[in-house]
Image 1: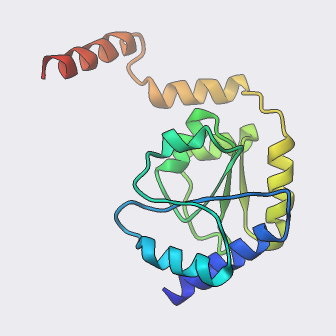
Image 2 (image 1 turned 180 degrees about the vertical axis):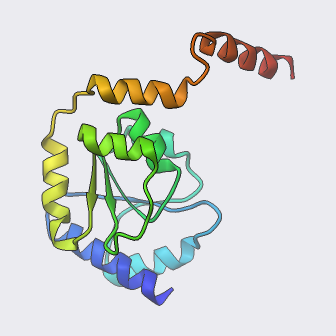
Image 3 (image 1 turned 30 degrees about the vertical axis):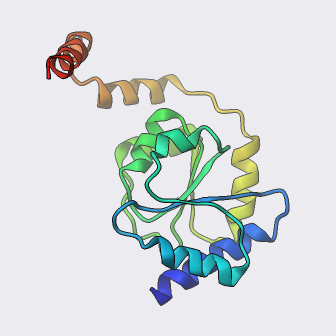
Length: 165
């Protein structure tokens, strides 16, 4: 808890120094304690929103980019969906999934290992016009639509199975 608070304080302090950056937090719905975050934000005099049980994809359209830390399947979802993402990983200890690696090569995902580079990375990614390379699109399609020629049928069958329930 103390280590997490120090880590979060470092991120919040860095983001707060730049008046052009506003930010909110989305915390895990079951493994994080909302009260801990509320207490920390109060101590730091931060007025950012803290979302916990809200759907990530309902929130994402309200923001220009995402900063994440740790390891989560959401990174693959963001990468696949073309969401601008900065993965802050100061210890460079977390594994990235193949789709994330492809998105890093494509340029809409950045990996940041130093807190003093975070603001620069935010500005760079925020101002970057993202274009999806054919290599990225092919890789994404190969990972998602693995049934070559049957994806439409598989989607239709899944929809029909949900309707029948």
